[in-house]
Image 1 (cartoon, helix red, strand yellow):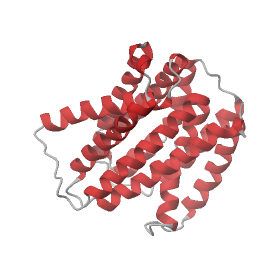
Image 2 (cartoon, rainbow, N blue to C red; image 1 turned 180 degrees about the vertical axis):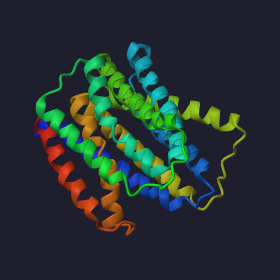
Image 3 (tube, one colour; image 1 turned 90 degrees about the vertical axis):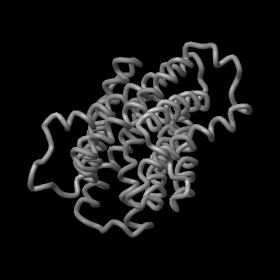
Image 4 (cartoon, rainbow, N blue to C red; image 1 turned 45 degrees about the horizontal axis):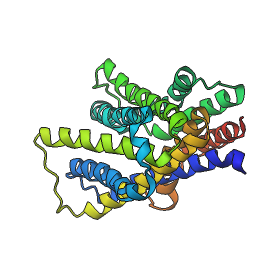
Length: 288
């Protein structure tokens, strides 16, 4: 069972990320998206700081790993979320998510270059299947008129590349400080501080009276748990096998929308996505 624990944790993290997306959507009313982002990010970091006195060892602060975990937080969510948001603005959420399906491929490359993890045929086939499944799940149609500049497709690709690099940097940090909680604390803190500075520097002010506030806080709580579980999986497993499984979060979101929230309908994409993703995850999980 221990050999499959990283895959099980990766599936749990993917599921929680999908749940958090739906919970956040409950609180959104079209006017409070900026407040939602601010509250979710700050809440996520606050959860880790509340537990820090219990779980963080003082010696961890004076290590190179601290800088690596902080750098990871600078890449994800700070820079990646900015690129992702601009991609949604120019391309729309559907096309942006579809292009972002290339993420597991970038993860494999980053894991090889930065961590030195080797790609095996089962992992390659499984990763390709998962990527194809995410692509199918994300594309729900296309616009008849192209109204975006060609370079806009680079935005979601760049966001996924930064996320892939961040995962590998975190894995390198675990060689010195094998502490998933501390890694999550540093990454979320850097993300919360930098994004908050940008938020207020642009003259924005969070509307704490918005009816969706409780849902945004709950989203932050769920996200913090998912982030911690993801880091545990990365610490005991391999980047090249953990992240392709975490990447199926959009598929979980689709299934939750279908069976729980009633916002999806069964189409040919549902069956194709499952037919691609399930075998892909099995192949990646069984690889050594």
